Length: 180
Image (cartoon, rainbow, N blue to C red; front, side, top):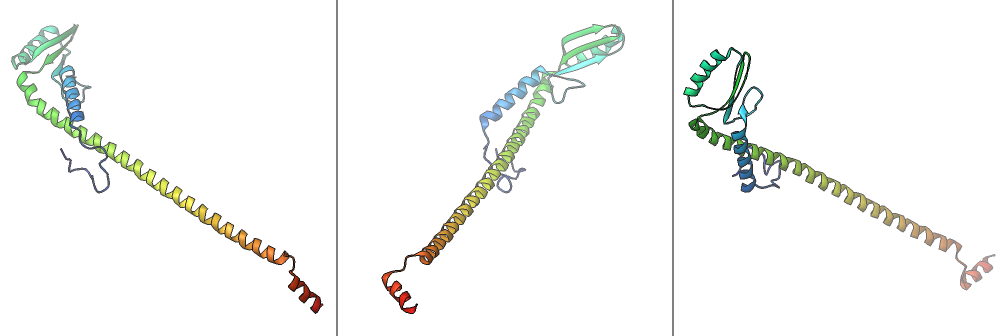
């Protein structure tokens, strides 16, 4: 599966290719969570169960619950306190079957986005490694050039000193005596 909404090949390198096994593992986790979670005030996402809460006398809450049960919901758990009834209801199978393809699609989008973010981070990391390596190589080359220049300068200075302080040869000594 190729994602065309991301900038692979232009600004991001696809280091981490699509892995069907990872995608199927994520889908499996999403399905498990879908079956265990319940939709409620604090739930972010889809779930096979619904938190049904009424803060009315028990008789009124049971009448309302009866209408919901006619729609195909089944009771999983009930908590009852004075003026409070909470039931966890399982959605009818036809609703669950209709929601599963959407759940799989959301898992695929999440997988593609996570993989893209991983590739963005790896691209940035690889760029910084390359830039640092090139800077290090340039510094090494500059140091070598400086050392070579310094060695060359030292060799020239040594040659000048040797010429200036060298013992005069016999011919040079005779010519110095004649002119003196």
